[in-house]
Image 1 (cartoon, rainbow, N blue to C red):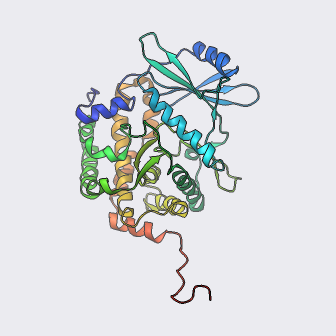
Image 2: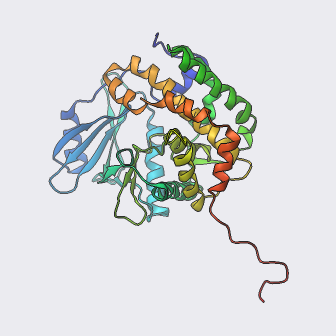
Image 3: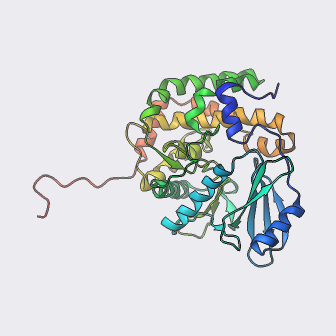
Length: 369
């Protein structure tokens, strides 16, 4: 298949998301020099696989850190949005297990690197969150609910956050799904194309008419099993929420939809069971409006389909990250098919059945008795 860039609105979203150009790795010597000069840090840098940033684990012999260098085509203000959201949560909800930003010796939260071609990249340092990724674990239903509850608490805490760049265009934002139909052209497999077309039709009929009326705010945007660190011994089960790279102002229900997309198809005989367990926990912290709940499983299928489509395109365009990309999406089409096998009305019924019990209001005349 041809990995040429999309056109029109899709092209704009890819460009604003930093996904159009091939990857340009930064010189590790430059990273070491900047860490020494601006953070007074020294140690061994271990490269980590990520979608688009250059990411390293810095081992100092004492406290480890995570070092990220943004790609040259990602705007500084977008990186600033991500950092600002993390610092906002640290100030307003310090009890949440959100990864912390380490400040440079001069108090700044990043270092701007000017490249030879006149563009810029942004280096940031974070605390390294120890523990296993959610993707490496097999949480039971209550543990899934605890993970969901953490996201609900994050969304509640972010309700008052705003930033000049929070309206940015992001190709991963589910609100743009119906503008990306041309991505189907980059899918060689006929069965996969047919599945994608079914999801686009479902989204157009179910979600698009309500898009303008959905409750919106800044959201994490990528609460996936690769961005949550767990602790089997902790009361909340979640040790860390990491990677705010997809932070954006969007419909709030699209935040739990991202996590649901990663749970559709599990187990195969009950493909929505784990996703519903997650949402039950989310609603402990942030109840979902009755009129928005039926849109949630459709949004989850849209996000899952979007990842499969973008992964196909990205794997061809950025071959040096092909293995990383395909590993994150290897079962997506299978799970889209499993999810579609269940009528959406039945999924919504499962979501309603899993909602936390609510104490009934006192009967009339009983208040204060």
